[in-house]
Image (tube, rainbow, N blue to C red; front, side, top):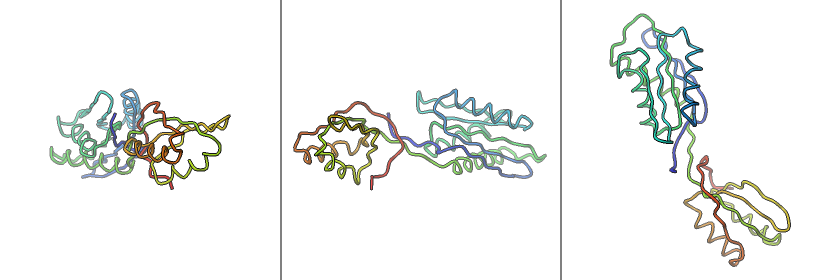
Length: 211
């Protein structure tokens, strides 16, 4: 698994180019099924449109799909896919709906119009960065817990769960690039009595350092 960038949410943007309306629709997706469902939803909503061009990129298995949906080959789906690729965006789908306005745009005009609509939709949707985190667990005494909390400050750490039983048990995710540093701080503060136990890895939204 590697760090990657996807879209924050869904968005739609409408542009007019020589009397044709181009509506860009963008959304984050986690599977090919979700991408196809989103495409089907837009096609149903704009069933009266001349074209519903789409492209999507998925990190898993590096899946790339696109369709010109009746536009001249290479003038629509590929430019939309190019917006995702050039933007470094994955796990995302973009559909650009075109209502024909009666004026032919030519090959270059179509490429520019579809690219612009796709880019505008992606920008409106916003970006979310996901990075690699190491999941871990640890147990500590109640007396050490007040000394543990300050160790989280200033580091990109997500506390998933804290249980107060016979001891204090904590499950958390530490951004991978600071995992070793956090482990050293923890060992120093606890004189080696409290150790991290790595339980897994995951991709999660990039988390700023805790305040």
